[in-house]
Image (cartoon, rainbow, N blue to C red; front, side, top):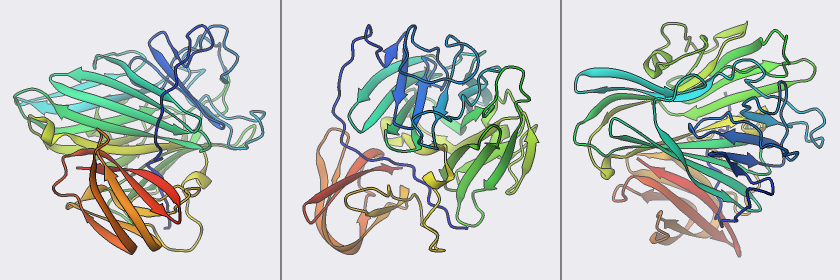
Length: 394
C-alpha cells in the first residue's frame, strides 16, 4: 500500500505580532492558526478546542454558537469556504484531548487534558505567524515530566502537524510512557444530528510499511474526511470508545479500542493515536521527540500512484528543491537524504548553529549519532533554490 505521510512542513519562521483588539490570533490564553484551507484553535490546555474570539468574523466554525469550543475546520474543496467541513467535534460534546499514561516509582498514572479534565498544567508559550505558516507552542508539566507540543500549519496545505517533546526534569525514571491524542469526529453534523462517521484503521504499524492511518469519513451533505497519521513501530492507531483516558489502552487495543488493521465501524465513536516510549531517564539528553499529522484530504498525504512506498515520512510536494529525508525521526543514528543531481546541505540546531555542512549527489547518508536529541532543520540548496525540512533526532 503506497502512502506518503507528510509529517514535517519545513520553513524558516519570522515572527509577526498582532494586536489583541484587531482579531488577534492569540486571545484568552488560546491561540488560533488560520490557513487558506484549514483553521485550528489551540486552547490553554494544549489541545484543539477553544471559543471563537468575540466579534471575530475571520474564522469559520460549523454548528453550535461561536462561544462553543471548536477545534478544526477545513475547506478541502478549496471553494472559498462555501462547502467547508467540520467542526469535527462540535456541536456535540467537544471530546478532544491529549494525555499521558506512565509508570513512576512503581505506580501507573493516567493524566490528560480534555473538556472535562485539566491534569497536565500548562499554557501557550510561543506563537509565530508568517506569510507561509503558523506555529503554536504549548508547554506543560506533570510529575516532573515536561511536555512540549509544537503545532505547525503550512497555510497552503490541508493538514497540520504536531511535534511532541517529553523531557524528564526530575530525578526519577519514567517507564512505559504513552502519549495519546483522542477525539470524537462529528463531521458535517449539526445539533440534532446522528454524529456517526465511518471510522477505519486504514494502516497499522508493524504491518505493510509501518505507517499508521486512522480515518473518519462522513458523506452528507458533502464529503468530509479527517485522518490521523503517524509512522513507526512506536505508534498505534485505534478506533472506538469516546472519553478514552488511557494511552496504554489505546496503544494495546483493549477496553473499547480496536487497533486491528482494517477495523471499521459506522458509529459515534472516537479515533485516536498513541505513542509508546519504554523509558525516559532524568536529563535533557534523554528527551524523546516524535511527530504526527492531522489531515483533511486523502490527497494531502497519499502518493502519486507510482506503486512505490516512500520510506519514513514523505516530502512536501511544492518544495523548490524536492528532496527526501528518511527515516524521520532518525533511527540508529543514520538518515538518508535523496535528491537527483548535485546539491549542498546544511543541518542547523535549535540555536541556529550549523552542525553539519557538506555537498552530495543523488543520495547521501548522514550520521546524526553525535547530535543531541531534538529538532533540527535540514536545508538543501540546488541551482540557487533552497528548501528546508525539520529532522527529529531521537
